[in-house]
Image 1 (tube, one colour):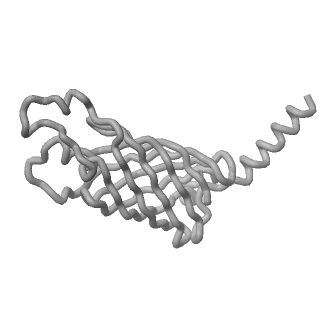
Image 2 (tube, rainbow, N blue to C red):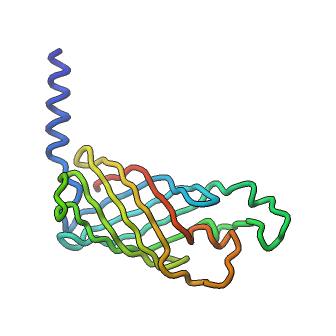
Image 3 (cartoon, rainbow, N blue to C red):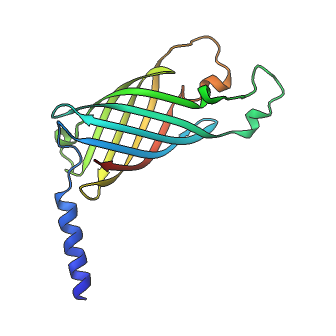
Length: 173
């Protein structure tokens, strides 16, 4: 019983002292799963605080799995023969960290932002919640705002060029 009380006290202390975004100098690393139409993959991102509510960073996605039904499509125009350049995406990003503005919980950060990538110019809405000073979970919704190639895209070109959802773990570095 004594150990259980000590464990609860330590966890409470850890949760009370964590904060999602403090401002300038903060750095966060995200690793998670990426879900989109016709594919799933891994997403890695890094954000660095440059002001009280502003951060910049990089985000990269690589699709590990592509829908088999598209790979075997008999039409050569519609077949999904996705090479590395179709599966990979890299973006620079800008976030407005609003956790202290909306003031729901100091462990929660909500961050809308813009990204400029190799596939498109896009926007995202993300949220991260920290359980301790260094560990939390995140989710992001990403959407292209302007495509670089607006001609009829074949399915392989639509990968990483559409609405996506990322979910995973975040670490305060």
